[in-house]
Length: 309
Image 1: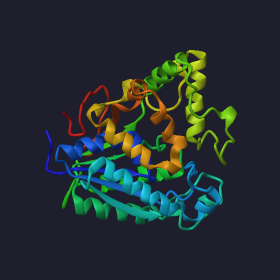
Image 2: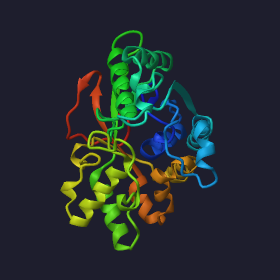
Image 3: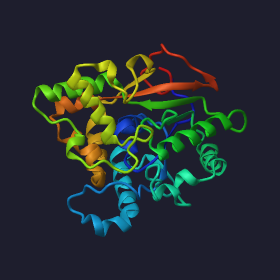
């Protein structure tokens, strides 16, 4: 049952809204639920994979380019029904890089001040649900870690008057589904994404702060070994509390993903797959209910919506 408030998504960069939560956002908008999207950083340290751009020329204006991509994505998902909020922090890059030490980057931001800015949005829009990442930011990027941190702190600080958020979810990528998808790709002779043998590792792509490439390559290694239990990326299905069926919103989700042309390395490979395979990865979105009315929630619990249905 849908309560009075809507759903507030807290993401780190432009493009993060598309893959893991885009279908849910589109579905919520279609159901008349208020949807708010907070994007914490400008994405200025992202890679540039748009073949229509000269990377050296585009680099100084990447933040502007990614803002345009984000606007395109939001329009694809919500047709004006998604309320955008930009916290305006500079992309932090990875741990150990110059970008990560920049005084304006999200990683260097005062935690209390950053949480306070998000809490102001919470007080203004009064959501019933907040969605972000797990404590490791789902894969260890510092901006994802910080986004999750301020989302958790804002949720906990909202308890009581004037508005208490009921539910806090962590988005999740389910290991078993990725194992099945990539196994099917292998059977059809389709190359697995982000083969590290063909890619120059990014700075500080270590165990603490792995790149997407490293995370997905580890999945590939587990597939080669035939060991689904060896996958470190994502969450086990047994830990997931909530599966949202977004099969009716795949066109919107694909359009949203396609908007982020500079990030084609992260998203484009899915768009290039035969739809019957791609649907295995994107026709459902998964979440873990961390808190309900301020109390810890432990699986097993199975829901089909972010409102507990």
